[in-house]
Length: 454
Image 1 (spheres, rainbow, N blue to C red):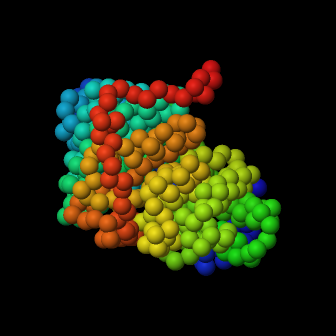
Image 2 (cartoon, one colour):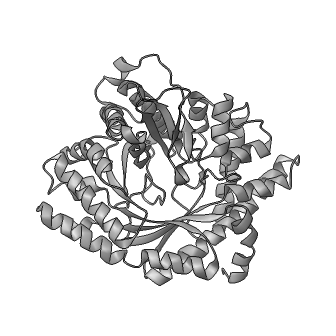
Image 3 (cartoon, rainbow, N blue to C red):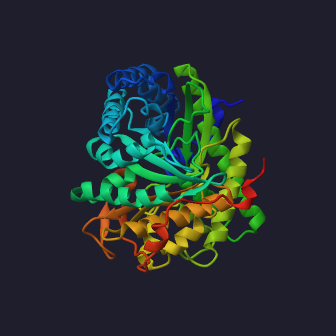
């Protein structure tokens, strides 16, 4: 049983080590809103979101006040809109108008972000899927809180290279539309391989069709807590190192379990999963890269980095699984560049390159996250980077993703300021050799042989 004593035990973590509940994300199914009339569909969507989520912000604040646990964001994830809007939408603008409705509903209930402006196209695209994807630049440009994701690949189905090629173009269009704001809207767009149905973190959160009508998912973060614990065992054996990470992850996850249970009880909505992800912030001491340095690296990116990250990710998951009935989402370690001061320092020191980050994504929880690249990067190159990341997820049977930010008007040596939790990022160089002929091929890359397990 979880009790208040366990929460009190974490006071130092909260006050001194940046422990927080990064998000309470309320997943809401919109399948019962489907209608062939666009106006009726949007009204049903607005009514359902505002009815189900009306108490979410207040409940989050009540839990914060009662237990003294910071809850940074309250968010909503909905059924992928390509599925919901297929019957009513005949143009990309029709889909973009649904994004307007989602934004209005999110503002009405006071949440920070709403995810699910999404399409699942790992094997092929319907007309609705393609219309939604082509509407993404307009939708993200004119909304404040809407986040978008597209699942391009899976271990079971392979990689939809037609969709990969299209997303390279879409990402650059999003960047161009927000070029007066350093292409900031790209932060709200992510592409996936093996996207999970229950991820509470943005921009990739959506409410999967296998989920209940509504569900509460909680994302917990504590890189600073893990680093502080490891400072006490500096120089000890790998066995001691692993045990320390596991025990710390257990304690952090128990905080998330408490918050999830309380939110579920107060909202009268079933508890889904805890996502224990070491998701960093720009705050000093809240860095995954600093954990890798504490393990024994001069900088993240030094030889041994992938091994150290694999160890960290595995032990975090082992500790978290013991602490909660249901652990899901993307649990493990995130390695975004712009949101992690230690990663920024490593890039500026020349210790981390895009290729090294790609190797690290084989063993982290997400992939190439919050990577700022030159604004003149060709769309085929963007698609090639995405294709590489999708291949890693497909072959390794894991979730991988890419959130790339081509910053229009800036190049290598420049930095870009995103603000808040998103921090700032140095523009990273990309390989300038062309992959255009590869990307222009049509069709899909088949699933690997080990996918046939039926």
